[in-house]
Structures are given as C-alpha cells and as structure tokens.
Image (cartoon, rainbow, N blue to C red; front, side):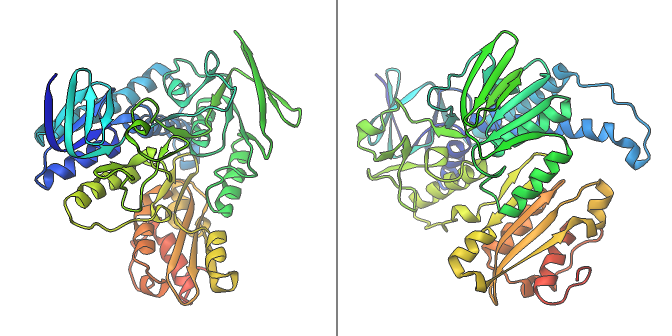
Length: 457
C-alpha cells in the first residue's frame, strides 16, 4: 500500500473540486484531485456545457425558420441530429482537453479511480491512500427520480436525453424547473411535441412570479404544452411509447418521459457517515464557511444544501482554498449568486424576488419596476420580447434583478454587481450604457426607480 501526503486532498474532480485544487496550488499548497470519471464532472460532460450546445443548435433552427422576419431568404430543411451531436461532443472534447492541460500545467496530481473517505484525513483509492492536512469533499450530484419511478427504456434522465440519436415525435417532461424547460425548448425547436408536468403552480417555480408568468405565456405562444399544479401518479411503457397518469386522472401519451425533478447529492458509499460527518438526506452539512463537523474536512458544490450551479461550485472551491490558507474570504449568500435558465426565452435573476423582499422588509418598504423590452431597440432588432424587473428597498439598495428575454443571460454580470455591491438606483442612474444595447434595459429600469425616467412613463 502506497501512502502519499498533500496539503489538500480533493475527492471529486468536477467544477468545485478542480477549482479548489487550482486555487490551492496558486497559494503555494500541494493538492491531489481524485476522480472516478472525468475531470470537469457533470457540468462539462453531462450538464451545463452539452445542454447549452444543444440549445445553440435549437436557436439556429428557430432563426432559420423565421429568417424572412429579417429579410433573409433561407430554407429550413430539418435537423441532422448526428451532426448536432458531433457539434456538442466537439465542444465538450475541446473544453476537456483544455482543462486537462490547465491542471497539468499547474502540477496538480490527478488520480483516476473511486475514492472513499476512510479517516478524516485520508482518502483511499484501491490499495493506495492519500493523506491530507485538509480533505475537501466535492463528489457532485446525480439525476433524481421519484419514489417508485424507475429509470429505463423510454423513461429517461437528462443524461440519456443528451445522447439520443433521434428526434422524438413527442416528449413528456416531468418537472418544470431549469432542466425541464431547457429540454422542452430544445425539443420544440427540433420539431417535437412537448408537454411539461409540474406539481407546483408555476414553471421555473424558484424564480420571481412575474418571470414564471412571462415564461408560461412565451411557451404557450411556442405551443409548448404544460400541466401545472397537478402531480404525477404513474407511467406505463411499451416498445412504442409511454402513458403517463396524473393524480387528477389525466393521461398523457408520448414517445418518451424525461424525468427532470432535480439532482441529488452523490454521497452514498463514500464513507462520509462512517467518518462521523453530519449528513441530512444525503447532503453534507457545513457551517457558513463550508467546514463540516469533523475538523479538517470541508464540503463544497452540489453535496452542500443550496443552489446546484457550476459557478457556485467554482466560487466555493476558491473560497475553501483561501479559507484553508487563512485569507478569510468573503461569503457570498446563495440568493446573491446569479442564475440563468437557457430556454427560449432566457430567464436570468440575482437577489431577492419581489415576494421575498416584501416578506423581509415589508411590502410598504419595497418598490419594483418592470421595464418592457419592447422599448429596447436592440431587443427589437434581435426579435425578442420580455422584461427587466428591478426590486429595491425604498430609499435603499437594489435587492433583486429579474429578467426574461432572448440573450438576457448576458446581462446578469452587471445585475449581480449592482445587487452584491448594494448599489442604489441613484448610484446607477448616471452611468452610461452603450446604445443600442440590451444593457440599456437595466439602465432604463434604474432611471425610473431613481425618479428620472427617460424612455418610460
């Protein structure tokens, strides 16, 4: 048995894990990353990156269909799903090679294999042990299902959906959150009939209610069907398709059922509980500085309760490395982490919803304004509608920015700076935004809240 010693042993090589190792090495520490699959984890190989490549292909399909709107004569002949897959896989492969090169250039040790925590400071892989002054747990997540709902055949997860070599004629999607609406958007653009089943009253239920209603309206216009506020009861399948039954007695027939009910923490069998780490329903519990109850053991990314976002994982990996190095990094609350849903139209937000702000400060102390993208020249040019909604504490800072429309995800950078720096509309109003740009939509909302609207009443 070989034993190797490091300053930091990282179990998991996804977004959270490799970010920890990179920052640790920058700070003069030694680090090893143990990964049983591929560096980059779910985000790079089975999640964020490949799904956005599919969504880009879907956007091109819609532009081709509607090209006459811009005075361009073209003919849409269909989707070559094998070519779409090659484009997607090429992006993933290029980014994977780049990541491997980055890790190698940083002299970070990578161990291929399944690791298990066998002591608070030790991870074992096969017959070898890796001992760290600190151990960082970053084992990621998996696609959840519902109790009694077995995945297999024509009942699939997002991982299976990405690898499909056909465009289904019809798909039912169980779950109207981020994964569900993104795949609904892709398949509709590719020509499938889509029905979303969501047990809660709204699509993207974690967003501000205004955005949910706007997305529902947009999806109706796109003829994406959805059933809201009704729960799934069961599904049967044969070689031709599936039949889904809902608790209200409704049945839905489709070629496939995509189960998109969220992701669970991939912690089972990794030795965490045996090492004395406090868990809750598979999640690792930590304090606000991401320390577990066991000294020297930290947990980050999707295994920690909260938002399951790659950029949250990056931030937490950097944070833990800096915390171990004694730099006392700044805590970023989950509510102030930007979110983007890449369906068509895109949904992007940061900070408190209007309802949460009113709950926190009192409705009489909160003001919200919605700027309609119909008044934004750049949005009109690219052919999108939508809104930018800004929520402020009266006589205080902006506490939330919520947007829906084509490409609004590109505006979230400015929005998160406004919220995290606690800027007021009065702070923002003098700043100049290029014309014509979609960024002007944020400027117009700020001008209105500052009491000096330009292109709004």
